[in-house]
Length: 211
Image (cartoon, rainbow, N blue to C red; front, side, top):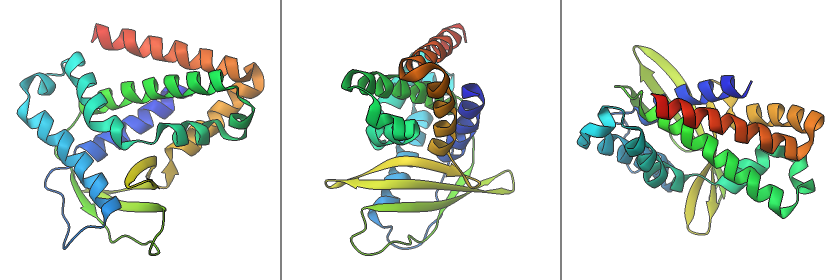
């Protein structure tokens, strides 16, 4: 099940990171600018680096670490994915869960960067009350004539906006993980979920080295 969710998220990110010449009119709101800057910075890096275009694993991972991960709120994403069990986790377990979830997303983003092609992104007007600290940035991705719904939930942390969830065609990433994580915790406990994530990340790392 984790593999299926990762594949779903991977293609979501291909759409997200594949945007060329984003279409919008007028000044974008700050949360929308975050999404646009993420897309533009990744595409600029891929276009200018032959090693990235060739799928160099080390270069892709470096790109993900430096260009993508700073935009994500890992603690919020992990806590939301773990759900009510997060309150029961010890500080050590929380740290391990965040570490493994982060590693899972690194592998996922690395796979997405390796599949970038020429989609185009349209940014829709932001619907949010003045002073809101949690918003949804709505975009539409044109991919081979198909219009794909791709939305981002962002939260304000201090002066920064961070992505805390991604929605493609009405399905939120964290919601999907929450159901799977709950099943694992129910049958194996929190340490069991950590072990499952460790094993999954180990397989993904080995697959990447063999690619």
